[in-house]
Length: 556
Image: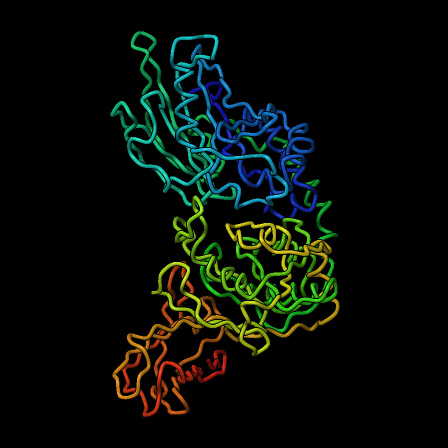
């Protein structure tokens, strides 16, 4: 294949949550590199909207030498700057690229930055555009080949989703690599390709078109590592030109002195859940950042507790000197901190929404890549939940500063404005009152290190899982399944746990299984079957769960 035949496109998320060298300079270096590489078009990803539609339209689009596309975002007035599709001519063949974005889009960006913008069904939108491009009416556009760029994971697609007018699909957003196919509406197997995140791989597809039959075919769909020689064998030009190298080197030089500044000291590692991108487990860095939010909230208006959304934590912080680069890598989005008032009932719903969110007005279990979004919560908060309980009924006990939460009382929560505006599907915050803005989260984190260095790490657990096979009634035999006793990364882990009912130990030195539960807040499990002590009733039962290291020590 001659490199002139190559159509170089992006599926979005070129900006936002990016490498420090680019992010600290407003991602202008990345856009300069894409311009220099000759990117022909880009789908709009959710991170293009990190700072709102106005920023995307007025700052990012004007410096991009390529068009952005999307067909399932709607607004009044229309988003005229985002065309539904772009047609690229290659060797006399017209190839249309149709863009769509994940339907979770409203929960992934700051709601106040996209007010008035709605998202429709991605597959339906793509099929409608593909139909127009294939109906023979030149007034609404025509193309020989239709390729869908969908900024949603391959996991969301199924056979028969796309009409017979669609010839290939490139997916993204969920960071995993994928090579496969699905049947379109005409019963034709069409390729589905998704490269790995962070530019480590690219998707490559050869498309053939026969004018005599009007049919498109494809060959050699594959995912390739970004290595110069491998790319060249696929017909790609060497895109690491002197111009690109100069842009990268200039960005590295400009960012180095900013990144090297030491902002504080850390005594132990602060880690995300095992695997980094998992958002379902309790983490030391999540709870730490919840504590930073509480401290900042106290400075602004006074706050009762702090929370942080797991998707807003993009790196670990390691023990020793902490630099500006390192804290920036943790919180690269530039969110502002804020406080908001919730009732105790709403605090309960907030915790329930870790496991569920509203779909068409009904509280529904979270699905997909993140079935649990475990909030980082300041260490003055503890709660008990039953992972087997129905949606909306999992959380049973909540304590703030060792006092049970009163459903009728008011509590001030501190967090970033993204979460407090209902981001990540935590819609309960939209019903809060007295929203008060504060400083940028990065500045708050730097100030915290300046105030408290060397910072100590608290390994105590905020959430405890407990399922009882039957109510606690004296003389009855009950099995207790305890969970969420351990962190999932390299943190110290408890070895045993005691279960105590009304002062009597019913489970002594129970061995904890620290096998990591992927994408769920249940790591650290133990089970015991016991006879409920004399005098215990469901009304007077007092349960204590205490690990040997004290990381869990809760009574309720």
